[in-house]
Length: 548
Image (cartoon, rainbow, N blue to C red; front, side, top):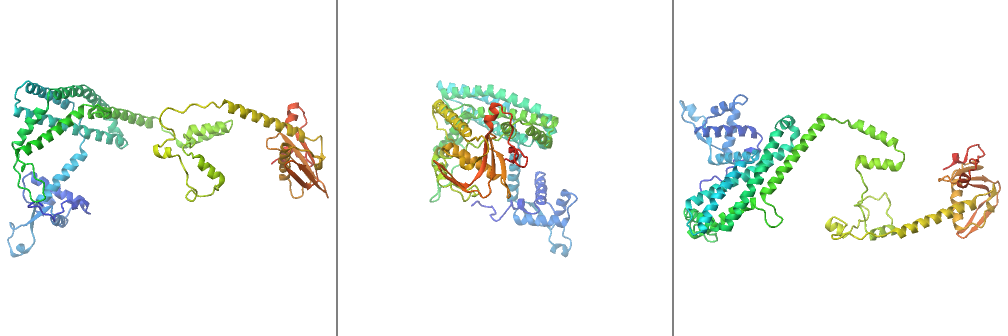
């Protein structure tokens, strides 16, 4: 615990208080007074600095609260006591406490670091190159057997480190402020457009200087290391260790300080620090032999990317200014395009083009999951939370992709399968055409006359009979309909007091009351050019008019 520090003080508590703005204004008055070498301030003095809008009682309450937190120190004001009543009345002089002043310095440093814009210091690159050239001369003299000037080497290294630290910190701050400027370009478009040309020129000039000077700095650092940088670092560390303050003897369990180890320990610590600084300077300009690029290259890449972002922001601003789009008009135009599409495939292509939606190919499952779903189907109304878990490929879970690394799989020749499928489609079409021709009747015939039906003909007959019965009403006597593909027409007439008939086929026996049925092969009639149209029903409506 440090001596003389009030551990009960809370100098940062006012930042989250209800009247934080007033507390900051009051403390700012005391900071300015300390800069003017004013020691104490009375409440009236603080009120005069704050100006109109505050009362004396409000200022006194703020001063008392800041004193309770430890930001201010209150001393009795006895300079204006003239009566006994004035002596007993509480009057105080206020000044910043050590804790309060330290807190103000910390807040000022924080605000400066956050609001710092930084700069790309091209001049610093030239200074670093010049200092490295001077350091190279000293290293060459030392390698030749000479003794380096300790004071000159130390000052040169200190100047080099300070210049490099300023360059790195300013570049980092500038790039951060530039990203904030691009992100909030909409807040002040006019100001952004006013200086964007200057900003782009500024970035281009720094990129060119960094490419040229950075290459020279990297070459100089390499030459210094080749000649020998370690003797220079030892000289600088020995000179710093000469001014090290001796440390006190450590207590039991404490780690000894550098001073307790003596001059050798201080020199060792200083040499370790200087090696670290030189490594940082070298890594900032020199890329490693591995894939890790140098900080200078990364900064150059970031600057080039910032120029692209600036140009993109300007293009977006110009686009918003020149062509304002009406979304409702766009959707109406899109609806008109959908209405004008000739078929469904064209509408699907328009949908994918307009909205950029594609098939969810990543939602694929394994063969085991598909087999389980076929064995135990899941109803479509089942919620996702209650449905079975989806098993995905282990490669997808591990790598995020179904494709394995390495050479791609060989392309499989599926021409034989395509020929087999085409042959199967051709055979099915021939069987269907043969079944239609076999089922076509020369005119109305009894249902019992349909005998010797093979399985293909029987399945087609069941479809025709189902279509006809689906169009029957409560008091129907005759119904006519066509199939959904328009290839066949069927007329079915009911027979009063009809006996039961049985149609025996290879697939089973069909039993039902007798009907009069007429089946017409419309596809064959169309191919032969038969002008006879659809068969008229009893109520004068064509077959197509009673279809499903």
